[in-house]
Amino acid sequence: MANTEDKAPSKENKSSWKDSIYNPRTGELMGRTASSWALILLFYLVFYCFLAGLFALTMWVLLFTLDDYVPKYRDRVPYPGLVIRPNSLDISFNKSDPLKYAQYVQHLEKFLERYNDSAQEKNENCISGEFYLQDGPISMVRRACPFRRALLSFCSGLSDTNYGYQEGKPCVILKMNRIIGLKPDGEPYINCTVKKDHPIQMYYSPNNGQIDKMFFPYYGKKAHENYLQPLVAVKLLITKEDYNKELTVECRIDGSNLRNNDERDKFLGRVTFRVKVVE
Image 1 (tube, rainbow, N blue to C red):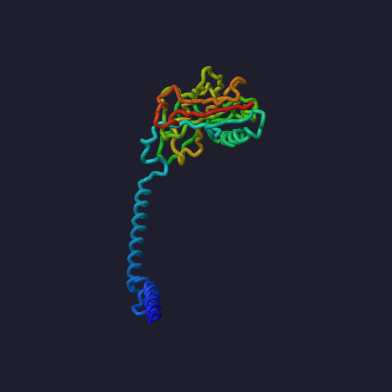
Image 2: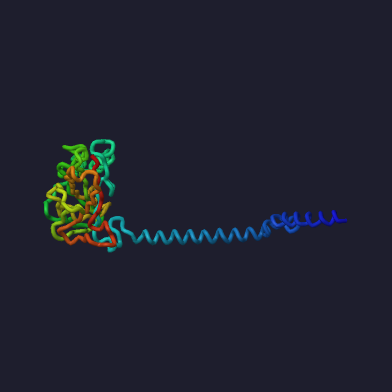
C-alpha cells in the first residue's frame, strides 16, 4: 500500500508538467488554444506594422524639411574648431629611428595629396585678402580657390620628405573646421605657444601663419564640392636641450572675432598637443 501511494503523486506531477506545455484534452499549447494564439499574433502583427508605418512617416516628414545644400539649423556651431595633422595629440618619436616617426610622415603625405598641383589646377585663382563671394541660387555649384602644398614651404613634403622629423624639428599642419557662410572679421592667423619657461622658435607658413580671406565663405559640401580648407604649417625648431622632454604646445586662431577661449570646448578656435623628441 505504501509503494502504491508513493508512485501515484509522481505520475500525477509528471502529467501536470506535460499538460502545462501541451494539454491533449483541451488542445491548449502553453496555456492557449490555437484561436487564442492566432488572435494575439494578429494583434502584434498589426501593432508593429503600425509602429513601422509611423516611424516611416516621421522620417519622410523630417527628410522633406531638409535641404541637400544648406543645413536647416546652424546656430549650434557658430565658430570653427582647430585640428592638427598628423592626427595625434601626443607626438612622440626617436629622430634617429625612421620607424618611430614613419607613421607621422605617412599621415602627412597622404593628407597633403589632395593639395597637389594636379588636384588644384581645376580651381581658379582668386583675389588675395578678399572674400570670394558667389551669389546665386543655393543649388548653384560654387568654384573654389586653389591651395597648393608648395605654400607650406619646408613643411610641404616637397623639399623635405621627412617633414623635419629626421632632424628633430617636426612639422604639424593646422586647419579650421568648415562652417557654412563663415566670414571672419579681421585678419585671422595661427599662433602657437609652448608651455615652458623659455620659448621655442617656430616657423610658420604660409605668410607667417595667416589664413587668407579668399577661402571664405564656404558654401557646403554639395555646392562647394572642390573646396579644401586653407592650411597653416608650423615647424617646431626644437633644440637639444629640449630633447627627451614632453612639450605642451597650444595653437590658437588669433587676429579675428573667432572665439578661442571657451572652457567648455577645448577645440573651439584652439588645439593643445604634446611633442616629445628622443635623441
